Image 1 (cartoon, rainbow, N blue to C red):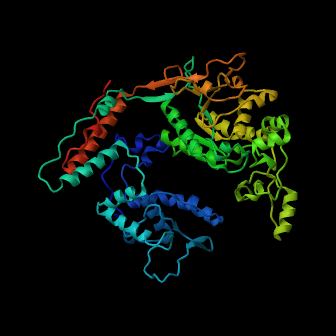
Image 2: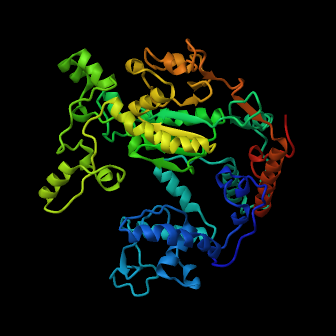
Image 3: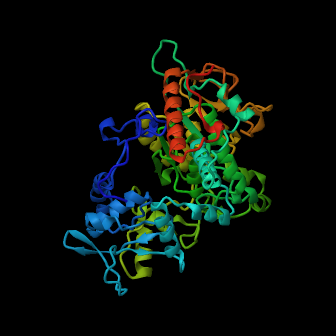
Length: 552
């Protein structure tokens, strides 16, 4: 809680050291702290407030900041002008929104103080909470300051959720339970015997796995482009035309997305940036896939140009019903054709994106619709410039927004040697693959894109590759890529598709044995456990204790 005092520095080779985190690789080492006081924390928060947050507020935007206790204390200190001494008495409880309202004072922003009769109130923001929730949260914060965390166990138990703990957290939890158990006894806790599973895991060689395609002339391998269709949605299950409708992921879709992330993690895929649409099913798929890879920190660039094809008046309707009403031929042309558009949606329909604030307020890279501007200005009796949003699209129309975005934005990132993930929808992906794989227009209806399957594009061969997951049925046979699926897996200039799978032991997979780096990490881990054991006066669970040295 002190404003100026720093804790002991973290050893630079410790597992948790920022020096060892890939996410901080582009941050100059001199700027990476191994320990911080609250003042240090404020010093790095202040530029973000002045350069990003404050300008956004002055532009009239509502801003959400999701951060950590001390980072937020530094931000609150800056907003309210709190003194160094007073900030030590400020607590920011977990998961309770703190809302600030601002007034303009010339070029400055001043936090509006609520007239609630609390004259000695330090902060001007208001907590949004259920009655009594804030009081309980602040009480827990006080206990944490005193080193007491018993309420956290009760809160976890009452929520019915089992927290996912890291090995270090498991070790600390074991030590804490032993401290409580033996706290009133003279005898020390007995040393636990290692479990068979722990011994087995410590016999494996620790390596860094990275997937990359080797180059014959020793040149740097090409960057990775991974494309994934969002997981299955509720609309997919009901066989409805979805388009720009913001259908959520179904439970199965969440599993598909997380499984895709686990598969990429097993193959050592390392990403640098993610591109996705404005549709929540694609965004959530990206989040869920990044979590098993420990890459949720990556920048996620969202654009409406990667949205699904706009299905017009078919949006939200049953595919089976449309097929029965209009016949197989028309149904196929609307659903899988290249240039034919479905009937346009009414501009007064809730399915028209012009009635969705996200597109009206934030799609700034569109021309103006003169007709819609006049109609809406007359209806609302105020001048409203309306963007020219699509009321229907063919696959060709969809490609006219996705392919230029790929060429102008994503391709330069790949040229800069960044590994890219694109999480999008079926027709947006079909159009991109048509461009990348040079698929003829008349063959496009034969292509299907399965949900939740990561596809790697091989730039040298001009085809799609699939990550083998070790199951009996290979992904190419297990998933439906359509009757023309071989077009995706045929090398450029070739006539037949070859095995598209990337196996753990083939040329794509490189296991980098970094014994020295692993040994440093093991020693730092062990030192950390021993320091904790010494502080508690007990020996922790041996299964969580890494061995010194390097095992083969």
